[in-house]
Length: 310
Image 1 (cartoon, rainbow, N blue to C red):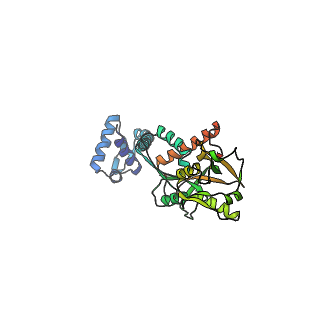
Image 2 (cartoon, rainbow, N blue to C red):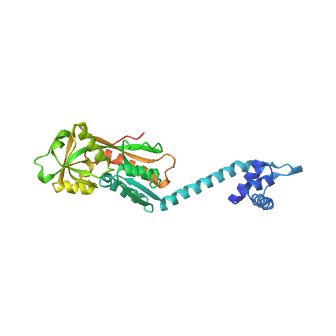
Image 3 (cartoon, one colour):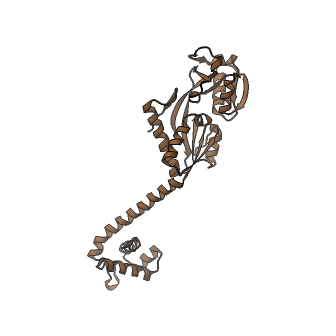
């Protein structure tokens, strides 16, 4: 008994016509009839009554029909599952992320994903949220970890909030006496800032906070990426407003919370009009599982909070 024979049998049983069934299966009618006859011989019973041009099921055919449908459905499910697993063995995830996340939590989450799916290629594009939103809209990324609110009115993006984190003032440890409990926004009026390049949400967040306090900040250095900004601060060139997670593991820097407090929300985004690939969906599941486990074990960096998923 072959699956193809069962498919021919179901087609004839549903159409009650050999020629119509052959057309539906895109096979020559004599070939279909031969396969049905072979199936009947293998089973030892006729499956159809062909009296006077009418095709009807025999009792044996009636008994076989639901079993054949189930076997064909199970075979289709098996093919899909195997294909999906094969896809994950050979798949690809094109992920965009802000530099602060690349320097923080993302490395551990990617390590876990690579352990679970070692054959899936991971392509990471690092950039500011605005750049990543544009890359998503152009179809150059499958997923992106971006900062809300979106600096875009593109309605084709779906966002899922996953993290909330404090912004702090990073200062060189060797020039800081004692641990500052906080820094007021107004104090930045007198402190030279190490400022990110245009396109960084952190740049806009810092400028907006200063302007709301009634002043334009003074830049010591302008135009850096995350690692460069942190190194410049360590060297004593100025201070910078950064996410608290990027100071984890950097003993040369200390962070003081801002007053009034500033927080930002990290979201996982993808295009609304394109279903994420199986590999992208698997990465999402691994990432959320990693954050949930880190929350339970209390291993998230200071000032970082995983947001509940609905």
